[in-house]
Image 1: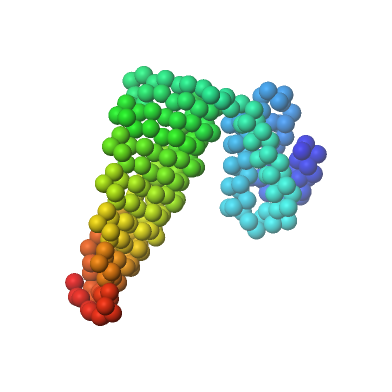
Image 2: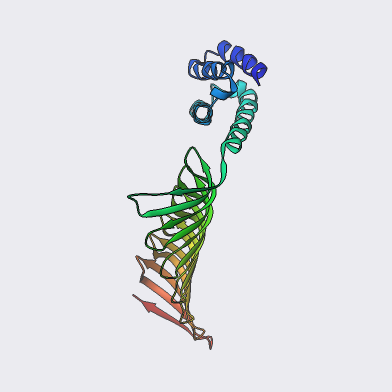
Length: 245
């Protein structure tokens, strides 16, 4: 990788991209250090800097894009190797003065990283993927009341696609953002009713279809969980009705 850095350095210098040049010089200095000193955080910081410069200066980096991409991929590979070599498996962390009780799983730099299980003092627990002490990736969160969420996590929150199983038999399947229903989804009620459509901030919001357990269905717009405007209802017998809210 060092030879590629020198070639790239010359190209950047000839194109007068001072910002990127300073970052590559930083990387060169990093590569001169012993491998023990090439820490994960330092390498990750340089990777993020290069990525930011590329995104903000697309025109100025066009001539060296292939070289940068090659170097970027090499650095990511080295970063992942360093990270995997430093992750400790089957570790246990106990917490004091916190609502957390303990964590069992993979650890990096003293905090959860990879896969593991966290236990809280209220009886909740999470089994899944972690990144820098936060829930990140795929996992299952178990509530002490029997509710359960299975799906995507980002930055410690339900975000992406997931399913919430409630202890009363209700269920939501679809998109999430900031721990709430957001986007397209389906909500099932234990009565047999269901709604398919748009959600926002944890509520039915936008266009959707409500299916009643008796076979009727209602189509229309919703705002903050309430019907609005003109709705069309189709009964099981085929009769069409219009309702104005």
